[in-house]
Image (cartoon, rainbow, N blue to C red; front, side):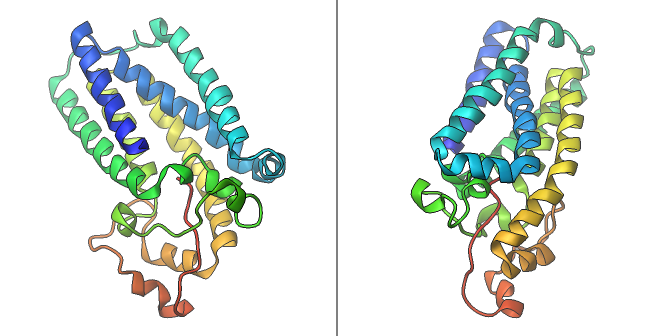
Length: 246
């Protein structure tokens, strides 16, 4: 469901922008989604212990209300209200860059949709990290498994890679300085978040995840897909659980 919604959002915004005759809806969608994501990411892993304790008594619905309603909703509202200002931060037509940006955007949406489809809705938005086994996963129906299908056989963080490329592609396509600034902010946030996320995943899922990290690059895809049996050469047979919520 989230994969279908993701593609539909870009299609509808593209149609709307073509009817308006200028880039409005697409840059607002990218800025609102990833601006909210930067805010949420910066407030999640650095405060993971707090959120786990607070949400343990309240359930996953409370997290979605806080995340989607307050953090994402607040960021989106602020960006929409300020849109007349930052939508004007653009440069003159540069068709070759726009073509490159459009191709980059389309490819990133496609691969990102593939990754979201393999991950599943309940594993998005940090649900897996916030509700690990024994701390709410069972009660809230949050699956805990290592996702090794699709793009996760080539690169550990296909969503992060495509997210960054999508923002850059949208910036080039719509000629937006604001989206280039957002891409820089997103990259800086990833540099802060990933060490915390990988430490938490290693603690939660043990040797199999560490073996996965040894075999699959963080950002630059492998040429050949990972064979699952390779994960058991050091750790013995049998699966052991989880994967990053993003």
